[in-house]
Image (cartoon, rainbow, N blue to C red; front, side, top):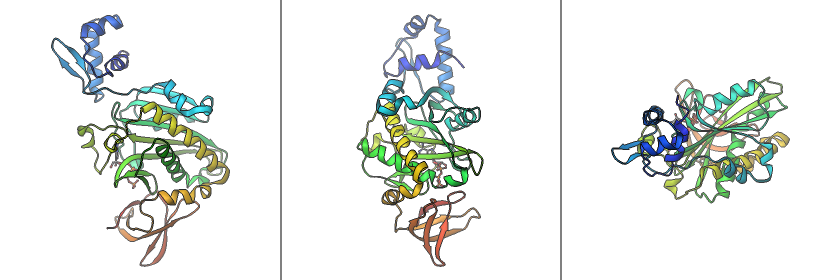
Length: 324
Ligand code: ATP
């Protein structure tokens, strides 16, 4: 790991050429040290063009997270947040789960420019890339136990939808239990991990990944249809997006802890892409159950009308797919 890698990436984030000599002078190091720092960036999957006589350059300008921009977008509640912006981490969720176990305060948010092992549900992978995606996790401590948090990932979806609406993002919807879709392609994902006692208190680490501008190479690594904000004409600053999401998350989580998912249920249903539509439920034993989505219960359980009558599905081991 080179301590210079991220300061250099910060300089290169303007998308212009910077000579090795200029970078070496700026950080008072040798050109070989600059080269080593750039190698480390490449080992992290960041593409850096190196052209003899001109220097180093990123393929395009990159919007790096700026703490002040994030805090301004959070607004009046900003003092409440313990915000940590990391250059590089394995997974913001894994990191924050460890911090939570060591006593990190309520409303700690960790965002990272690069995640080297981003996680999805059930051991799946979340693909992200420098400047191409926003990845962060938020720690929320609850007095109740983990057993009472079953509707939480749906509540988080409501917060994401409100934030997207505030930013003028049109045409997005939710897919039970935890994805944000545009045109049936995944724009953002949510991963919630819990710790604490079943009957309380408990802590939730809420991980969110939002695609901003995925290079073609990165898109190819994702094994299902995915989309980014840039492709749907939204060019929001990464810090503004993070602050807006945090502001809405805090509001929704307060509603959730006071009144439960029931207070958000009607709104969630209005965003559900498969409401009253035919679906397939992919069961853990490999079976597919076909039916039509009819409702969601107060604990986030999906109600699907099947040949056997109304069946209830909890998120844990089940995936939902379109039935057409
Ligand atoms: P489920 O319906 O069970 O939630 P899922 O396939 O959406 O299924 P998640 O665990 O929510 O699973 O998300 C992980 C999956 O998301 C990965 O297996 C991959 O298919 C997809 N994925 C990974 N990175 C991205 C990304 N940056 N953008 C969109 N989709 C992604």
